[in-house]
Length: 305
Image (cartoon, rainbow, N blue to C red; front, side, top):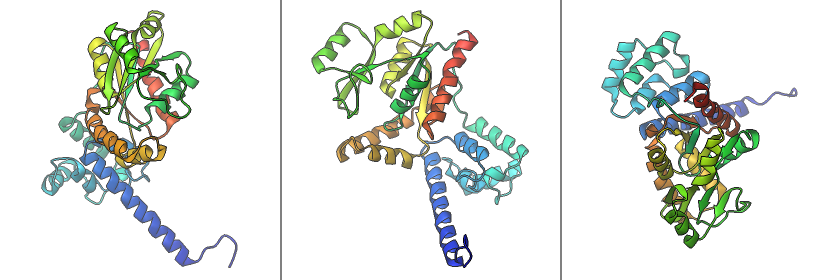
């Protein structure tokens, strides 16, 4: 056999395995749209960006029926209305079809629009294990002009975490003192276990200097910040899929089975709140997600708000 050649049977097995993996990936995406982990518009963006991806190779019929409240009858009426063949795949739609499908979606399931008058106070939130801390850490390392707030917490340090750099690790008595003295911009009990809070003074000092401040906090804290500072810019960090979020949580190995189950229940609730935010960023790759957040961070300052 010549070098570089493989037996036909090996090729067939490899092709079969690749096809199975692609079907599973598309099935996962459909579940994510059905359970509102991923918006239909986000799935379309992924399909158009890479027509060979699981999103891009999904048939338009599968896409439409994954959207809540759309059955086969309504799906067929939509396809007829938009003049799209049922055998078409999302990545293979023409420019007119893409425009019409996007318009139809936006008219019925509009994505939230960013609020006007946003400030240099940026809130980065998202579900557990989505990588908020990793993305924030990347921004801190590569964009020192952005001030990253350090939260206080009553949970014990994880391996490698440093007091004052990753968190201020305090006991319950000290946390109570911070709350009573109004020294925290926001505070919350997360996963029914530990308390987290954002020291107010460093943020106010940085904003007074004209700096941009990035807060990496949970959903409860984000809502409190918005109440205290309505001009804050809210950014929600999303996982590529629910399955990927589960794998990340299990893979980091910092929680036991009971804690993982509790965090995943909370994550479902947190994901359902993504519509409350000005922007949504998918953390497929840390560097890309961080770059997208930084671009959003700079936008309000350029607009003069």
